[in-house]
Image (cartoon, chains in turn purple, yellow):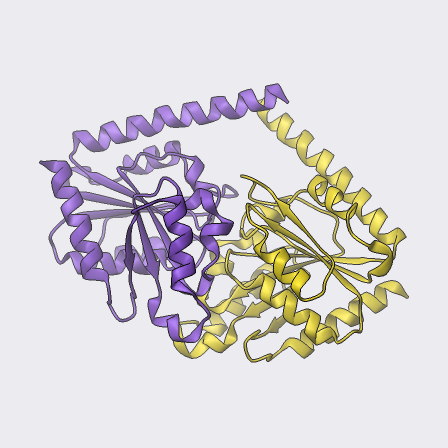
Length: 220
Length: 220
């Protein structure tokens, strides 16, 4: 058992080192990066495409898409005119720093201000693996239900912002916003939170303004 | 690296052995067990409670609830009058056979016909760990989107039935049923599929009749 724990620790510390190298590379090109995490189907890709629209040319963006299989998300990003690289993890339930390092080698970093990394759809694994990001963003979707902070506390700790997506579905599903936000507040007091609907566009301006401000603060 | 692979193989084979022991224990008590897997928030617990209702006393049921944290789901099952045991996995993204073995020791197996095991909400990890079940059931919810078979193929292979949940949300979200079922058919041809709505009750009779028949076939 000690041997097993030791090996897991070695893997994590090798990953942390590569994640630091990724950050240094991004810093050298003045590219700000965000790591977007969520359950499968919380609306990560649609949210990223709507963020691009909401940016309206204020920042030059690129996208790394993480999935077990398929190029569905990258195809959408490329169709929207973004530089995009797909990572297929095979069986792995998260991106790691080495996968992102390889993807960065294919990105036009010189022509970018913001890199959005869409992690594998999973509420457990991604939080344990740093990949080289300046901010960690969690998306929680309304139809997933209001009990997720209580069931997946690890996903809420250590986040820099929370997106509550698909708020247009609030009339059709049981979701107690007070119960949800109470759970979030216990785990991550004062967390910047943005309720949005990619469908109606509600909330996208507040989120994109906040993000642009974060990037500009970091650059200055 | 070889050492790491060897250790992972040892863990999996020890788990398989325990899973076989769980099945043998269940068989000795004539308890049929199903392992329910899905993304976070696909509606597993509500579906289980509605299954209980749809059974209308035809089978005596018990529930094991798997979550990283909290007893929310077990509280609901107990409130519905079911024998229920909660497993909190801490950081683990799946149940394993040893956790289920411990939980079985607290279940009134003599007074049960059907054990429903609700796995941790995750589309990646649970499929790799046998726990001791006669059938594997996947729940895919409409608001997660129609591309999930293409992105999480491993979750669709090896399943014995597919529940498509929250079909009452179809009018409000983009979901191409042909595209979805085409993906499922490639991965798992002829998979028994039950579209349901826990909200309206639609589809619950077809599912529960199928399940009762499976249990009765197995018992005879």
